[in-house]
Each structure stands twice: as structure tokens, then as C-alpha cells.
Image 1 (cartoon, rainbow, N blue to C red):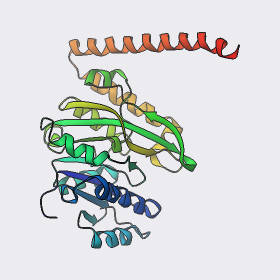
Image 2 (cartoon, rainbow, N blue to C red; image 1 turned 60 degrees about the vertical axis):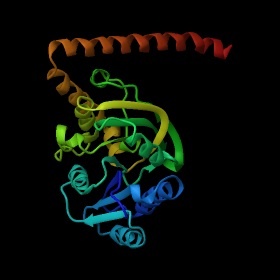
Image 3 (tube, rainbow, N blue to C red; image 1 turned 90 degrees about the vertical axis):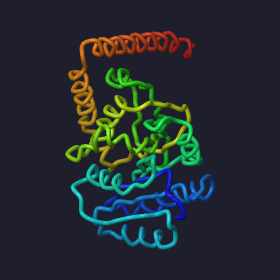
Image 4 (spheres, rainbow, N blue to C red; image 1 turned 30 degrees about the vertical axis):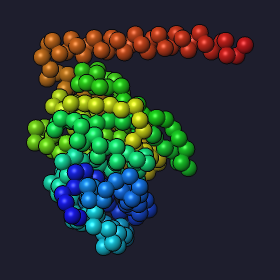
Length: 275
């Protein structure tokens, strides 16, 4: 690379041979089609895979200087994420899990935003969820645009493929919780919302596979994920001063009213649609 990258894409991986080629090719396609290759690096943090993942990464890295990788044992995904952050040279970072992918043009768009915002920002877009057989499940459109809404339970981003942020944010809020292997993203967002300027764009940036066998899918099926998320929000709420707690409660009331109105409208429309 001829100059320091502005954007670092970080991918933690372990024994993911079926997905690693697609992940690398997705970033490579973004660079070829929409970006200056000198402005982006792709750091792949491998946890000492034994299934052929490392050999695929090595082959790509030999031909593409924007790829940097290391392979060593870690204690889980959060630990790998923290290692990747320390290796990142870009001022802005984004995490791309090995089985997820960016919407075309996303990285070029983020490069433009880097030069337009203050130095402590988090940008968030929409995320398309995909099920088995590449079936579209739903479009995640974050409604939590400030910390109070996030703690109140407004929908936030489901997946890091749809948000990017300044690396220096970690200097203020610390690393990802290496002991948390399931809800480390929400834990990070709660802390980030309290320290960064939040910008939301109603555009689809990320794509998230919600399929059997994936950690998030299995955790959601057990119902554990929702309990963990509620516990994180309650923990953050309990630390707030009384005035901020009142603001959160006001948003919770607003959300209940909006849901009630929507439910009544749907109840009214259903009989009409059948007639």
C-alpha cells in the first residue's frame, strides 16, 4: 500500500472455509468497483483454524496487498476483535463477520463520510437479514438514534456490517468485552452511543445471514439472546442519573403508545382486506 488506509475492515474468523472466500471477494469487489485500493485495508484475524481457512487467506494475501492477516489462538470472537482493532491502521473501522457481506457501494460511501464528520462518530445504516436458501427475512432499520432510545428498547443495528466508527472511540470507552461471546455488539453500542455522534442513513449497507448453525441464530432460538439484551439495557439504565432515567421512561411510553396505535390500525384494516 502506498499510503496509510483511512478505513480498516476487520474480520475475525475460525474454521470458516465455506465462507472465507466470499468474505474476501466481497471486500475485494468493493475496492475494485468503488474505492481507491490505497484507502482500505482488510485485516483478517484467524483463531488458528485447521480446516483450510488459513491457506485460502494466505493465497489471497499474496496477490492483494490490502489484505493483512495473522493466525493465532484466541479466547473467542471478542478477543479476536480486540486484537484486530490493535492491528488496524485506519482512522475508521468496520467489522465484517465471515458469513456476512456489504451492499455494493457501501465502502466508497463510508470513505466520503470519513472526511465530512467530526473525529468521534458512528455511522449506521440498514441491514438485510437472510435465511436459508438466500431467502430475505427482514430489513433491520435502526430506530434508536440516541442513547435514551437505545436503553428504552428501540430497535438498533442487528449486525456490525451495517455500522462503522472512528477507531479512537475505543480510547474513550474501552475494548469489546472479551468475556461476552454473544451480546458484545450491543454492549459496545450502549457505550458508544454515550460517547460518539450518531448518524443514521436510511440506506442498506450490510447483509446478515441468520441461519441454523450460526451462533446468533442458535442463541435466539433458545431465547437467551433477548434476555441478555434486556439485562444489558437494565444495567445501563440503573447507572443513569434520575433525570436521564425519566427521559428513557418517556421514550418507553412513546413506544408503547405507537405500538398500540399500530395494532389498532391493523385490527381495523384486516376485516376490510378480507371483504
